[in-house]
Length: 153
Image 1 (spheres, rainbow, N blue to C red):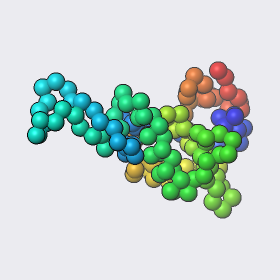
Image 2 (image 1 turned 180 degrees about the vertical axis):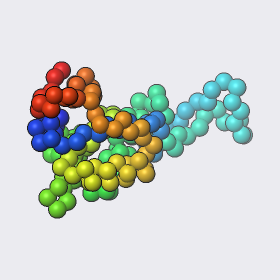
Image 3 (image 1 turned 30 degrees about the horizontal axis):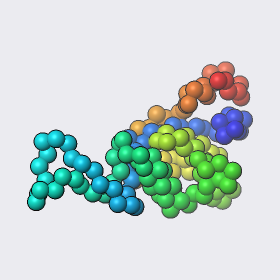
């Protein structure tokens, strides 16, 4: 629906990908991990406490989502009450929408300037690759060279 709405209103859609997203999350619970063979620890310890999430950890996805959610809320977004992966920011009648799927972020809205500002804020907190104008995301082609307002799957 977000993509269809953005196409209908002629809003720009940009795509971002968070590099090594799961490594940003700070652990809020105690988790211990054994170390790889050959790694020597002081005082004969055979495990370490994880302070940050790592890939392969069951909690990594949730911890990453909590980290992203906390930051996005801190820069003025609110979560849609209908869709937890949709963030909305409205300023002076203009809006920006963030649609999040794990570490992929679709940014769209009524103001190109607000979109650029939000992208700058996100990139200042997380290392991200910026694919620019979104033409294909999650199996949906969004490019439309004929300038017709449509999507296809």
